[in-house]
Image 1 (cartoon, helix red, strand yellow):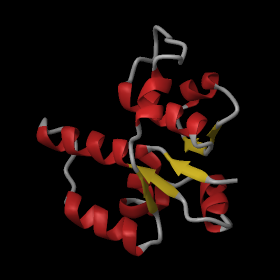
Image 2 (tube, rainbow, N blue to C red; image 1 turned 135 degrees about the vertical axis):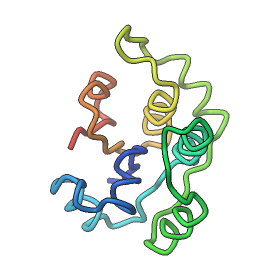
Image 3 (tube, rainbow, N blue to C red; image 1 turned 90 degrees about the vertical axis):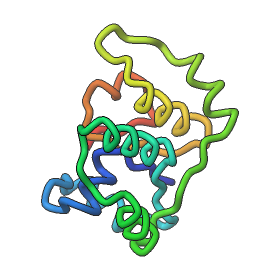
Length: 128
């Protein structure tokens, strides 16, 4: 099972390890293949930094992710096209989450998230 961390879990893993749920920690630490962080998450963090909603040293985050053995998942046309096929829920319209779900379906990967709303997107999403 190949894993993809959502933005929150990636941040927590590298910045606030105590917030990572035990189940997520077990899955990541026992993964047979490198765990992915999407460049969509990096993009989301960059936007949040620029509007004052997040305060982290983004270049340092990137170096920490790479040093920790995570791999970057590029954004491909197939991922973007897959977003259009996702159901749209009135209480969940976050474009970055939707792109992560699309990536998990397209690759396939299991998207690890702490956002229970994402469970509605199906079997490639695992809420931890």
